[in-house]
Amino acid sequence: MRFSKRVSSIAPSPTLGITAKAKEMQAKGIDIIGFGAGEPDFDTPANIKEAAKKAVDAGFTKYTPTSGIPELKRAICKKLKRDNDLDYMQEEILVSCGAKHSIFNAILALCDGGDEVILPSPYWVSYPEMIKLAGANLVVIKTTQQNNFKITPEQLRDSITPRTKLVILNSPSNPTGMVYTKEELRPLAEILVEAGICCISDEIYEKIIYDGREHVSIASLNPEMKGLTIVVNGVSKSYSMTGWRIGYAAGPREIIQVMSNLQDHSTSNPTSISQKAALEALEGPQESAGEMVRAFAERRNYIVERLNSIRGISCLMPEGAFYAFPDVSQILGKRHGGQTIKDSISLTELLLTESRVAVVPGAVFGDDNHLRLSYATSMENIAKGMDRIEEFMNKIG
Ligand SMILES: *Cc1c(COP(=O)(O)O)cnc(C)c1O
Image 1 (spheres, protein in one colour):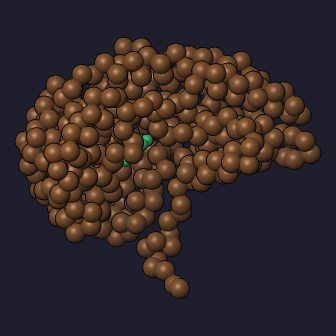
Image 2 (image 1 turned 90 degrees about the vertical axis):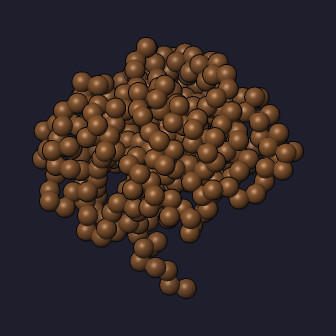
């Protein structure tokens, strides 16, 4: 069978691939410490599950409006006002099957073949593939640990051409954990407004933020920027609801309308039951989200301290999300057990087979000098995993 050029250009999700390999080894009875997870390890809060059960019992199991039930859209508008100082009307909200789905719809709604999309690296793995699917061209702005993985106004200005359509920002960032401040966003917004370039602002880790930092949505800086921005958020990460598949987009009415048309003829509405659960997540008690973040903060401090104490590794303190993104460039090119560790992928493979630790190679995020370790796992696992990585690194010649 011959497949379309469109799908032949995209790769399977590499993070899911490594998780699968680790699971396979686990199934054979090998004890693997997993740092690959892209989701909170906490259960969905009980009040949210209860709301879903109620929805089932009440027979709320039929099609809903494609773009989401009005009460959930109202709750999203309230949330955007309360947390982000953003005023949206219901017609400016689209509820999707996860934030990923909202981003996909937005890219497809905005980009034609040959358009350019600016993407800061390291980037979340799905963005480049979505851009390719839309037939658009990827323009990567490289950031490094030295500049805290943040793009500068000069870099942004230099990347813009007459074909530039869109820039994708993700703060707090997966995989780097970095958070843009208002002062850092302001000059970026000025450039985008001046050039009339749209922005997808992926704010899915908004609530997972540390040390009293404040999440700022670029859309909140001024009305012109708001008019160019599609704010994307959801309940997956904040409320430990990855499997429920509810995310949303907020933006100018016209783009939300075309994104909704796209959804009309592809997925239709996100699951009715999950929408009721998401409503409870946004409107119900918020304590469990806070408890989760406190647990993440404690693990973050521990894992970063351990990583920095290992020879050849240096790691920034993440400001948000639940990933450590250590620099392992000093280890690349060295030898382990007769093999040369040539890149982040071979280091990842060796860590899995030799030390039974699953991490994600930086190469999949567009940065071969790093690894990504999710600390959405227990302290006990983190301690054991760090012991193993330390032992591995001490054997490197
Ligand atoms: C997890 C994740 C998403 C997707 O979230 P869903 O709502 O589960 O689709 C989007 N962006 C980033 C950066 C993520 O890490």
